[in-house]
Length: 295
Image (cartoon, rainbow, N blue to C red; front, side):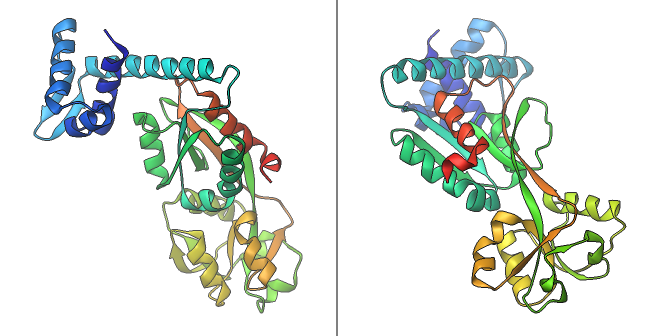
């Protein structure tokens, strides 16, 4: 059995499409079907269920996929290690994250990484948090960078430096004159929130509950940029990561106020439990862990 066979099967399971698996491997759809048929004959069991256009692995197919993915990851790692002997770092790294992390925490890291390792193909995409978890589990990514990382079966979390949370308000807001504030001062204030269900808002709701705070939610948004614009026009105050408002604070459109007690937004890289990270992926994580090296 050749390594290409493992790759074709993994691509088929991950893409859920014979046509996409064929394109990824530069072969025909009939060739993909034939390889699956040969595998099922060899192991004397059905590996895939076909329900119309839907393709899902059987229990046996899931086992074969997981072992094949581990073999492919190990093989790629071996190739990269051999190529890196006496040579510059090469290979590829597939990373996905949410928009706010990509815009603020990753921007400098990406620039530094590409400058140090120009031969590495870095693929960075923005996605919803739930999709990042799904894509990691499917093997479509090498790394997922998420906020408030949650333990999931089949995934491991690599802790990264957390973001400090601060209060933001318009320059003419009464709290704008304060350098520090007790978070309980937010009780009863107009507040611009993240949408319900988002990890950031769930975490903030827990903080409010722990401190007996009831804010008056006037607007809800799914991204930091819109929240900042709403705070700028005086709609209310909000809580966001420190790095996300440096430009507005410098230009004077927003004021940041630190809390007497420090609060953080946890950040983490998620990878498959049995995944062997490539040297390039490890270097990317190293830069994420040491952001001062990327500045």
